[in-house]
Amino acid sequence: MLDNLPRGTICIEDIEMGMTRHLHKVVTDRDIELFAEVSTDRNPVHLDDEYANDTIFEGRIAHGMLTAGLISAVIGEQLPGHGTVYLGQTLKFLAPVRPGDMVKAQVTVTGIDHAKRRVTLDCVCEIDGKPVLKGEAKVLAPSRKFD
Image 1 (tube, one colour):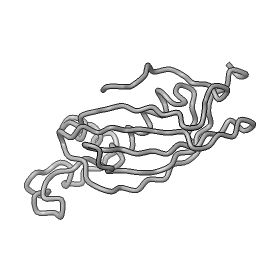
Image 2 (cartoon, rainbow, N blue to C red; image 1 turned 90 degrees about the vertical axis):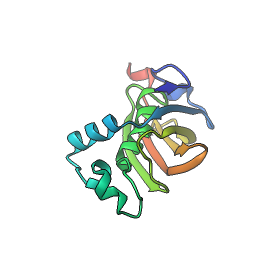
Image 3 (cartoon, one colour; image 1 turned 180 degrees about the vertical axis):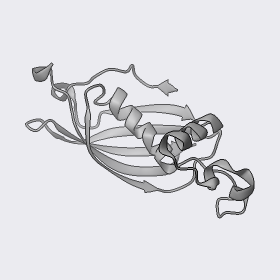
Image 4 (cartoon, helix red, strand yellow; image 1 turned 90 degrees about the horizontal axis):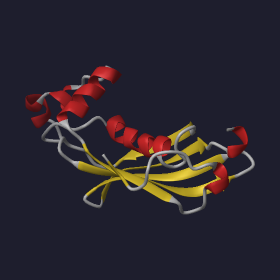
């Protein structure tokens, strides 16, 4: 995984509109298998080449929530980072992610409520610059006042 900045915490007092963080990750067969095991989602479109070849995707695809998990990784590890609490997330899946795809997951600050420690983030996952997932997250950011 390639992050654009170190992992850690950005407290609400230091978050600014337009701040952005991202990571890159190649989705592997092992990732898909582990996600299927943990989630218990064993849909054959994710795990069985023969089955998946006869679907509209014409091949295996990663679980959509595996891709969404990369957004969670950016939020939980970079922006705002450690101590962040998810309040909500919207997601729109635009294209499949396949084993071997390099996904760029990025979040951008689009709203800040300092008094309530709430941050709104635009979220996107891309492959070769093409969006495969878009959404918005609302989170409770950590504060130096409570550390």
